[in-house]
Image (cartoon, rainbow, N blue to C red; front, side):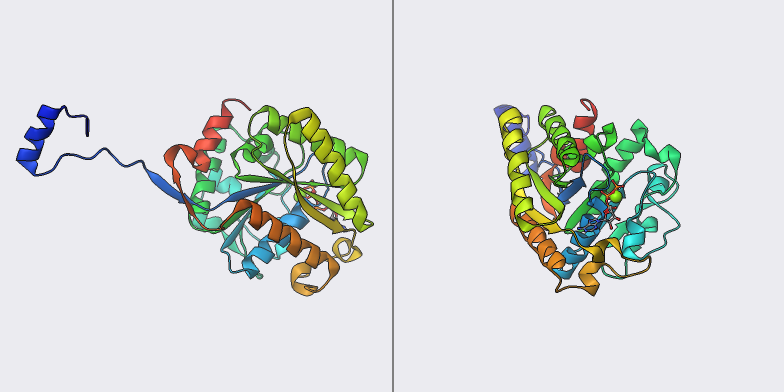
Length: 301
Ligand SMILES: Nc1ncnc2c1ncn2[C@@H]1O[C@H](COP(=O)(O)OP(=O)(O)OP(=O)(O)O)[C@@H](O)[C@H]1O
Ligand SMILES: [Mg+2]
């Protein structure tokens, strides 16, 4: 049966209008891959990694957007050298449109600035979470890659945002506290059935071999207790050039493109692009958009 008409209704329709009605095509929306950069413990280097990846992706001719999801303690605008007056909170509270808050940063990526020092932003209301999902969908339809700098820890909205993303990059450090907290994030995402693929970046390693051994420890524990296979995205060295950056200085990827740290960042970027697949808006059915995934996981997180 076509178009909900029986054979008789169909032939009457064909006689009257010349052709049978076709079933409605599923609504498709185009959205770029959304990559969440998260951690368990705070201060592992998420903002440094996300802003660096955004600059590198822009350098590879990808229209890249970065969203500062560290609600209340945003800092990506400082790392990318802009002073926004409007931020994500204004959009989520319907006080501004997305296009009014987008900041084009001097080194390419478009920034959705987060709210810095705004306490009520630390916890989003349900309508704000729904608006957040719609906003990410709007952003993803106009870019090739969307990177989310997630706040530290396992707050419901951090977990929900990771669940709704296409790929999660977990940033950890070789210390046991950072590893334990990273494992807590992995376990939570695995329990929710949301962790399709998680990539691990080990930051601030003192020797190259520490990156590999740290990844292997985490991979073995995750595989044994959650059945999840983690992806090795590589390690970044401890680098005083990162720690000593002054306000207003351009990102390290711009000022030191030949440094070992930027080479390591390029390799992380290569591995993410290889795992996530082509970076450009892809067609998604209405129930697979980022807004739909927010709605789906909002029920369980
Ligand atoms: N590879 C590195 N070498 C040296 N210092 C680093 C490195 N990566 C990050 N840092 C420093 O560590 C500190 C924390 O980094 P960053 O702000 O990126 O972490 P974060 O995970 O975003 O923190 P938060 O959880 O507070 O959002 C910063 O002072 C940063 O300069
Ligand atoms: Mg941060």
